[in-house]
Amino acid sequence: MAQVKSAQTDARTPLIDFDQWAKLAKSDPEAFEAQREKAIEDMIGLLPAHRQQRMRCLQWKIDQVRNRAGTPLAACIRISEMMWDSLTGSGGLRDVLGQLSQESVQPLPRAPVLEMRPSRQP
Image 1 (cartoon, rainbow, N blue to C red):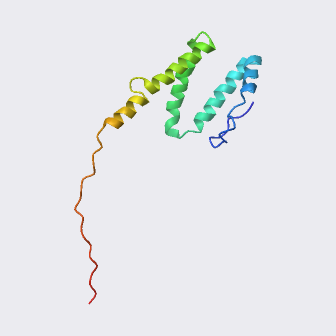
Image 2: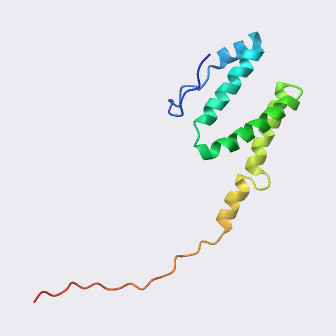
Image 3: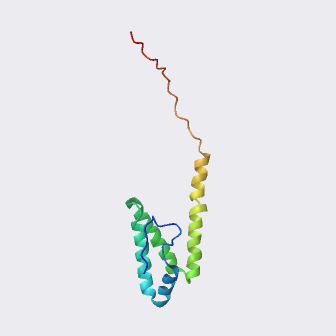
């Protein structure tokens, strides 16, 4: 199975071989699931330590959506809805950006400017 590549991988090179993963999913679903979990954990491990726990919690939530969905398509739709909610929902990225643009930017306090004259040499 293809290993997860580092974040420095060429943008044109896919991180995974889709056809190989699809073949594994059909031939050995348990091995596929184990490889999927390992690939996800490998990617999370590339993140700074202070972000890893949040990503593990998000992955847990995604896994629960997958487990409760009746079909892979239903899971895909629900996960897509989760992504849209994080963008456009209450407290989502759009709200945060809107708040930033509405906040008045306070100018820095002015300080007196001292004129510096060269000292005269006797």
